Every structure is written in C-alpha cells, then in structure tokens.
Image (cartoon, rainbow, N blue to C red; front, side, top):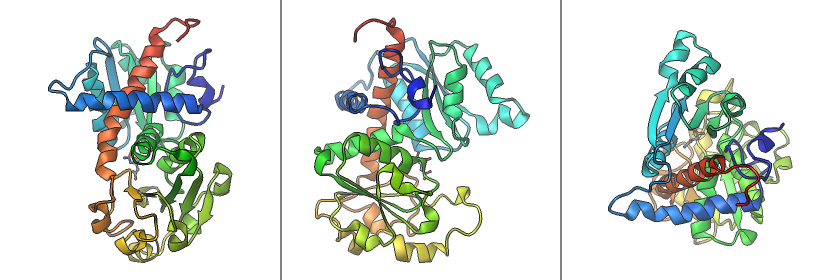
Length: 326
Ligand code: NCD
C-alpha cells in the first residue's frame, strides 16, 4: 500500500497524516476549516479544549527542531492531552537502539499518538506501519520527502490573506532540492487549485524533473517574482548539501536574496513567507523579514491551530468504528 493510501481508512478518512500526496481537496479543506474554528482558543482566558483529555501524545524528534516541536507540543497541550517530547538525537539511538525498539518501548507506555521527525525519508510511514492500530502517526518532517503539517499551516496562512486559490500566483524561492517543505507545499497548492505555482532557483538547487510536480521553473528571480501574490522563501539547507552546489552565500544573496526592491516586482499586496529558521542576509534581507508584508510570525502562530486540527481529526477518526458514517 502506498504512503498516500495507508493514511486513510476504508471510508477515506484520515487516520495518520504522513503526506498531502493522494489527499483530496475535501481532506485539506476539512483541516483548514477545523483550524479556523480552533484559532480562537488562543484568545480565550483559558487556552484549552478538552478534545484530547486522557490521551497521550509522544513527540519523537530524531532531528533538531524548534518551531515544529514546540508548536506540536502546545497544540497537544491546548487540546488537554498529556505530552511527552523525546529528543532522540540525544538519547537511546546514540546508544545503538533501533527505531523499532524505541517505538515498542514507548508503545508499552500506552500512548495514542506519535509525532515523528526523522532525517530519513519514509520514517513516519515506517512508524505508522509498525504501531498498534489505535495509534495515530503524524509526520513532522522526514528527510527531503515531506513536511505535511508545515504545508497545511502555509496554505492556511495564505488562505487567510488570499482566499481565492483559483487566481493565486505563488513563487517558491531558493533551495527547492533539499526542501521537504517545498515538496509538500507544491502538492497542497495543486490540490487546492492554485492558478500558478512557480519555483525560482539555480539549476543546482532544483530536483530533476521538478516540472512534473506541476510548477513553472524560473532561474531569474526578477522574472519569477513578476506579479505574484505570495513569495515563499526557503532556507539554504547547507547541512544537506554534498559538494559545491553553490558559489558563496554572498553571491546567492545577490542573485536570489529577497530585498525590498525586488519585492516591488510582486503584486502590491503580496505577502512574504518563510518556514524558518531564516538566514538573514542569505536568502532574505532583514528589512523584508521584519517588514509589513512579512507573515513569517503569523505562520508560527497558525501552526498551533493547524496542528490542533490535524490531531483532533486523526484521533477522532481512530475513535470511530469503521463503517460508521461521519
Ligand atoms: C523546515 C524543516 O525543518 O523542514 N523548518 C521547519 O519545519 N520550520 C525548513 C528548514 O529547516 O529550513
């Protein structure tokens, strides 16, 4: 069974969230609408809902993360779950324990959900295949493959500013080759019917046959930014680069860095996004990152509501007997 299919039950409901690939517009819209209704929780005096009361969520982070890990943690807490975060890069695997052994030990602690980040593509799917059927698995980033919750918080942020995807023009700029964020975002935008998705990068930072993902390719930043509604900047993932894919950071900034002057080429009300962590002066100028068009911190805030939505939908579907109509 493909990753896309193994996350759905026989009625086509989401049991895990491993990739946006293979999902329908209805699935994505359900997540976005649920997140919209959960957004207000943060404004309440008591920032909590009882949805996951009595449930245990375990964050398994085999790779460094700040935003993703903490917003998953807050999302689970705001839904009243008990939450445990394991930074495994620093614990058992260092002592030689296999992923499967780690899993079985944590499973033995009777948890209900695993949130997995791992440097290996396919890791979250591997976990989903090996856990007990009552456990929901969410992918918090696997290798270069997918980062579906990031894609959902990105499209959620876009939808709040630009609700009509049928006229939406989006440019994704920079290190597409190493970016699981770009892969998942491109898929989500296509599923939601975005009019024009562009990737702007030097040839060395683009995956082979990137056009097959449903994007238009530009190597020239100025041409690519022309009239877009959304600019998504990506970090240069130097830790994933082997060999000399780049000249120097200064040269990269000269050709692909987003400055106020270059942003003028986009629509006057264009928004600027970045999944973080940002490298100031490498892919983005500080004046743009901190400027009025930047929604970078909104993305972080929205990440909590979107993750709350995905957690309640997947665990809710686990609770339902199969065959029952939703
Ligand atoms: C991204 C990631 O880890 O894939 N960051 C994130 O989740 N906020 C992108 C990156 O590391 O550049």
